Length: 217
Image (cartoon, rainbow, N blue to C red; front, side, top):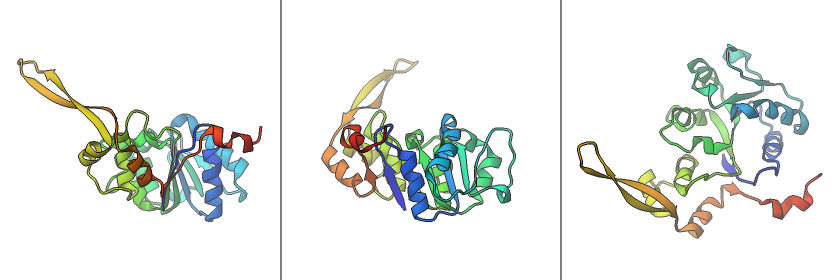
């Protein structure tokens, strides 16, 4: 149901997700991605899917009823913030929800993250949810928490996760009235072997050096 494909860039994560969707005979597929990648996903489905199923891209200014949505829908994370788009997508039971560049959802309090992973988010309307990212932790291990929590990898709270897998330091900040407040800053990671073991059942990651010799030109 939940998986993270974390292969390095240029190793064909979209091709793998499309092939996997074919394999499970997905009837309704929603791809959420950065706006710049939307058209590319249409091309990738045409190139790598063997089923020839109908695909569309949601664009700003286009109004679409839930009944008009085709088998494959690609939507940007930014457009997901539009209430009518979100409502339309939420009305469909998706076979597969693909979260391209899933690190875009690393901030648990961000509105787009809530619309995917929140109590009433799209993840609850999907039979399967697959995250794709060559950089699942752009800055630190805290950015993995929301994904791991929703995917059932951990039951730790955010603060417990940070305490377990992040090195931190308390930085003093002077307030306007001359007082001192302390802010927790993440400076590195810890318990990395344990974290890798925790992720292993749900995460697949290959590096270019491992597989480049097997890829086409």
